[in-house]
Image 1 (cartoon, rainbow, N blue to C red):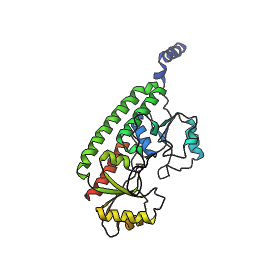
Image 2: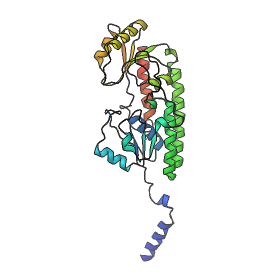
Image 3: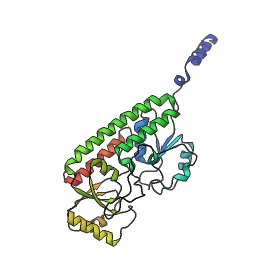
Length: 296
């Protein structure tokens, strides 16, 4: 019996540490669901990110709970858009290892647009950068690089996953161009101007927004200007989000028939997993195409 135990001990000591036990998964926290979906693709086969802001909560002004602070405290890495989007989160990240998407090399940032005429506002940043397939690929590669540095055992997997994700994003980008090419002259407006990155990726013709933020009401002058534009240009498609003010849309369109695309820029209805991000963009594309054409 003693000889058997001794032999077993020697065999265990001979096994390399990386093979003796399952590697400890890194604790990665993503601020919002779209970033968590990108992380799902990069970490597939090795782990899954934790989502900080719950579905349905404001990603601009979320109030951190004690459990959220504990999650951030034990995180090995935090992935967030940046101060242009999650204004509440900056102070809680001091001293933490983070990836800030809006400052990554290769990220294409767009300025915010004026409500009235959709012209860019100098010195501003539209924070919804994750709605660009190219930006999503950049985030994925940066995440893979940082994860590989912290988890050498999974380095090859992270990089392969990021490469596959980037290839999928290029395929998706090409598909958007082809899908919306016949609709490039079809105008649309948005309830809240959150879709600029997607619009540019697909070649859509944005003609203005109803509100600066979903919780804010537009002035009477802006409502009148938008109603006049809708009538003059024959705009019949409104990009909206869950819980939007339908009465405001009715005031803008008046008696003119219009269609609403239920577009959720945070991908709340998309299941978590490696294919989740691509599915979110595809769902968005389908809703907008239906809105512009009137065909299911």
